Amino acid sequence: MSSLVQSPTLEILGTYLLHSYDFLLRVINLLFLFVFITEAREPEGFSIWKGPPFTNGQPLVKLERVPCHAARLSENGSRLMVTKDNSVISVYDSCSSNQIRSFEIPSLMAATLSPCGTYLQTFQKSTTPQEKNVGLWAIDSGVSVYQHFQKNMSKTTWPAIVFSSDESVACRMATNEIQFFDSKDFSKGIIYRLRLPGVAAIELSKAPGSYIGAFVPESKGVPASIQIFSCNKDSQTQPIARRSFFRCSTVALHWNKISSGLLVVAQSDVDKSNQSYYGESKLNYLTTDGSHEGLVPLRKEGPVHDVQWSYSGLEFAVVYGFMPAKATIFDRKCNPLLELGQGPYNTIRFNPKGRLVCLAGFGNLPGNMAFWDFTEKKLLGETKSECSVTSEWSPDGRYFMTATTAPRLQIDNGIKIFHYDGSLYFEKMFTKLFQADWKPESPESFGDINELVKSVNTLKIADNQKKAPGPISSEISKTPVTTAQKPSAYRPPHAKNAASVKAELFGGMTPSASEEMSKNALRNKKRREKKKEKAAEAADNSSAGAS
Image (cartoon, one colour):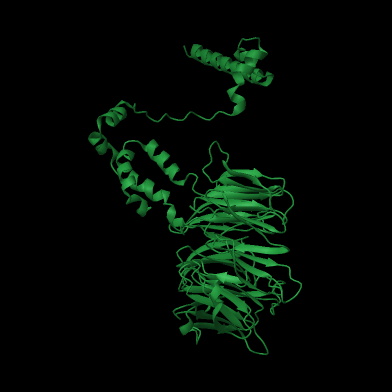
């Protein structure tokens, strides 16, 4: 929020905020209103809503339902790709919702956008090797800038051409090598190659895209390895970091935002200890400065369920171990910073501000969610969201959305939006829902609302009221000062209407005390009265005898 506080507009506005707290709340709401959107895709098509807070509790529709088979936003949220049938792709500007260009691609199998929305990449069904079935299209011009043949498509080979987050680097994994392109001019073709026999998976660092992580599986007794290379051609003679290990069939590579650390989840299909049917997994950590190359010290045996970096790239969170799983936040030197306890968890999400963490258990787990304040190291709240398939924080970090989608689940499809403390804010059910996403936005464009409220509350409003202009000060002086009323005692619902019910039963008259009493109460009352009379007579007799 510091950048917002320093802006001249808000400084001028701050002089008036001192005199009206209600006005402050209105300004805070405007800071977040309609800045990001939510996309929902149903069988009939997709629609775009303006994001929370909602007016009258319902989202405002920014784009009415558009028929489609698939929809995908670019990484920076600037453009939206919509597949309308098996051969037509339309690209929209996500801010104005206007269509930029439409492409007709026969026998289309898959399509994706580059991180900044500059290029459209398509994969077509091919019958002969001579047919170049992977194409890269410039969206603004609609021209094909590069084509090549690819036999099949898998999770590790699609997208075929990989970009860094800022699109400064583009490369492609081929047989025994990594091919690099000029991301601004693909007409140059392959500008240089990195020879790496057996390479099976690659991952470019975020921004700047100055490093690339490569995985080579084990072969003929040679252990598998993860290697980090520079994307600069002159510095690729040797890897700048390397980690070797056995019993590994697949890997998941996770770069931090500042391109200084790489987390590697190494998964094997067989667990030799026979403790898990799903194999075993290990978490490795490599840094580009060579300060760490090894395992992350996890304090419980079992699989690695989820890993995520914070937005700053200075911390990462891990959910690991046999159920109940354990969750820990580490710094970039692998020192534990915060233990989040144990429970039925397999998912962890840092909010874009890096202050809040959601720890959850989705999939075949009951849907428990715990919201933590990482800065204050305290639990904010707990709740549940059963049968959730996807989950993510909103770009401003104030809301957390879970979605139950098809085809994973065919019933109870819908979305839930929670406040950052776990309280439910919005819920909507669908007959069938395939996708629900936030529109990506840069977290820097949002301020921290807590910092603004605290900074304004620390100022002495009373002193500034005397110095304020006439109209504002007079309005404040006329405002009556109300004192807090002492809360009345609790009365159960049936007691609140007791008088009216009695009036109806007794013809508008309140029954007497004797009529209200039961027979046993009347009998006991008569007994007590007789005892008092006998006691009074005995006292009189004793006083008469004494005289």
